[in-house]
Image (cartoon, rainbow over all chains, first blue to last red; front, side, top):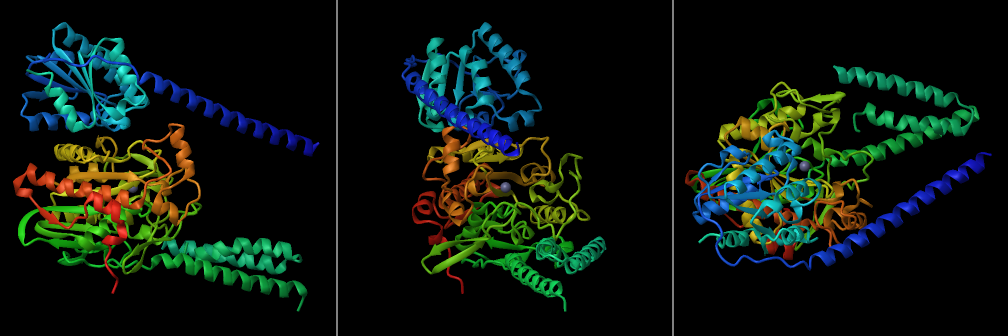
Length: 206
Length: 48
Length: 375
Ligand SMILES: [Zn+2]
């Protein structure tokens, strides 16, 4: 009796193990195939200036990428203001809203807000900016590191509202960002590094 | 102070384990006791 | 004499032999590996200079000072906050053995938690030491524990309450140097070390403090800089510099509600720009396979490759692993970029530091090429 029950347990454990392995492998294969297909999506390239200064810079997801963009703007001598937690009433005289897209749990912690509040804030902000006729430029400069569950929430909440999307390549390996851009007819520029992203941004201004 | 009380307790337990070891008839039981004793000695000497 | 007494005596002698040899092995971790004072080191002082309470304890550790001829800014590099993060330790040793400061002062504490170098984490199967080939022969370094040796600080409470904030963490974190800041003069052993380091920063007016770390590949904050808000403009500049040189690094703000860490507490309780850097170390990870010296040095691990395929990691992982020289190169590149960036951010804090091995050279020549012969 004892031996029999032991045998049953072993068989059950072994079958669980094989189910686990088989399942995982098929999942990873299909996702690879999907990504190989969707990267092919063609996006609309920016042809001329679409934006004007002054710029207001904010974050979608509270990652420190917004500070890196600030550093680039400052070095480039562009006229800008920054408010990481800008709300829809704070757009002021700005003609262009630049939004740094990418989530950081540390950053949300630093700002003392949770992900849901952050999504509500950017949703209201982007709708207000569009209503006021501002040009909205989205920048995803964190590459692969700014993808995943948390960041993707903010990507989904913001990218469809932008007029022009700048992406550092590593962040679009699976084609998700170019997919949204193509679907919404958004200008998009894929660049190799964060430094190149400034060149792509500059192109949007006369 | 607390360290010395602790070491005293460990020493006491070690002595009990040795007494227990010596009083066992079977070698298997003696080996059992000695496995308990080794980490106690390392603690007593504050090595690990 | 009875038969059972004879066997008892034999078994007891056996126990004493086992205790003797295993004890000797454990105690061998107390032997410190040599660190050679390089051409730029102007003096070596004890950390207890800044808090006499540490004198004679295992918390007292060497501070290497490299003073330039010209006055200028100052930078502190903390290696060995967690001695199971070898790239952090080795990067600080490479600084000590190579760097020459022309302007300003560089302070390096290679063994910030000296006690944590004297033991290994139980049940982790980690090696006690690892060896690096140099042109002059082999150099050895210890692979210690994340936390203070419990022989030096015990018992652990069930819940560790961070003194300055009341934050609650698991009891063993009470021995984690990077949860004890800003530290207390009358606190635990670990808090006293924190207190001494904070005092040192205040006494010397150190402008920039870089705490070096490594993280396991499944941890989200990895290949990253974490910066206190005052240090953020400098850190953003460093992240851009590193990324434009194809060194992938992220930037994270220091959360205000995560207490006891260098990038929060040193930034709040001193004037220093407080930052922390992380590289990827499989030998401290939870998903790792066999944990040996080779894993420490190469970072090659089939289990992590598998985890990467399943999309569970926050860094790329392939059959090349994350070799020690690459991790050290990242840290050194970061340190150099921070010093340059601070210099242009505030001219009063300018420093000129030479002979930091470049990223490319460290990666291609290896760590051994930048270690000196031991006398
Ligand atoms: Zn660490």
